[in-house]
Picture (spheres, rainbow, N blue to C red):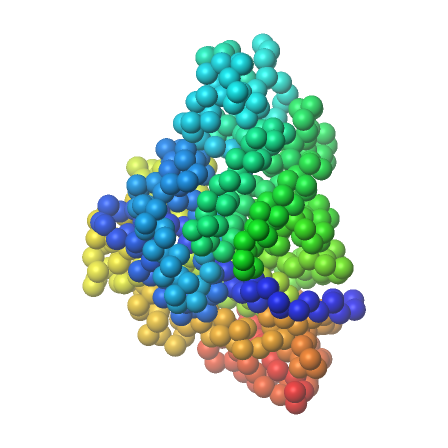
Length: 512
């Protein structure tokens, strides 16, 4: 495969590492057991010291919390659980003061059923906002579309007020907005402007591909969904991009485009006038296989050859943690992969601590779709010093802290040169200081079985990344013979010869 074209890092997000804060579980300032904006503001230095360039906050808006903030009742205010608009302004200001950008979650596909817009829409069939949501009459649901939550639950609920059906791609408490109605698009653009004026640097757009649906509401076909990824989605995302471009600075639009077919994903970022970035979720569904990971990367490199910038991730608030899926040692190898590929890496809070999913007892389960284990609070200090809340809260945390918080706490790992936190800090520091790793071209390298190796090159300076996916030692690629300097290993005491089991290395080649 020839080298991909080198793209100039003229936007901050090209060379950035972006860190996701799930506010409920990041830091609690008032002792109620739920994280909040003041708590997050007080811990921003952790993100800066890690080496990330931006934070993305999951929803902080007013919400009944049926889906923990993704059911929004007021887009232009902060839920009291998290604080106030002043607290949001203070977080943005503090982030900017210490050199961090701020992205908010933008949820354009649906609102809460308690949003004033929906209250009007459901009140009568002739209300001016009736067309803001997707309504249909009839004795049965308009089609066989299935909601994302629940076991084969229809995506339609009959509302007794008018005896018609409304569409909800997720919970019944999350009615879908009708983006075929121009007033909806205008209203959502106004939401963007509200937060852009307050200084946010961009948005992560929730289920971005879902704002384009078949207006005829036809049933899905094998291999073709009619309730998302419809052609109309692309001009709508281009409209969002134009709103961001009204403002000074490099504001960024990141799409949650949950399409595991990369041929369908690529068009969201290759046109140059829609999303800047779209999360690539294929890694989150892969078995531990060097060949499978390489095939995914090489395919997406080909698909973005003429434009487009990848966005890689290993986990988030909706998916099991990497260390749970692959184990502690392999999670480090996976981190080295994501943080050295061409593209923008996204990290989920606690990933840098090597956290695993936390067992949730049956009395504590709160989520609608089994996602509590990856959302457990961050342990900032060991419980022996900070109490049961492990520095996250002085009260009882809304979910249990990690059972090994005594050893995984931030303050403990920060003092341990062999800890996962130290490894992440070193890896992000190396990435930032090495143009080949954040801006260079990508080329796969022939390697022994079970080893995924690739070259990153910038202005003649070459760096080789070699990742051993096997639980036993494997030889280094032949191109490593020109290695001048071992820059970093996932192992504390790497040897000089072959790769150890579950080891990754970054090697500087040549004299450049």
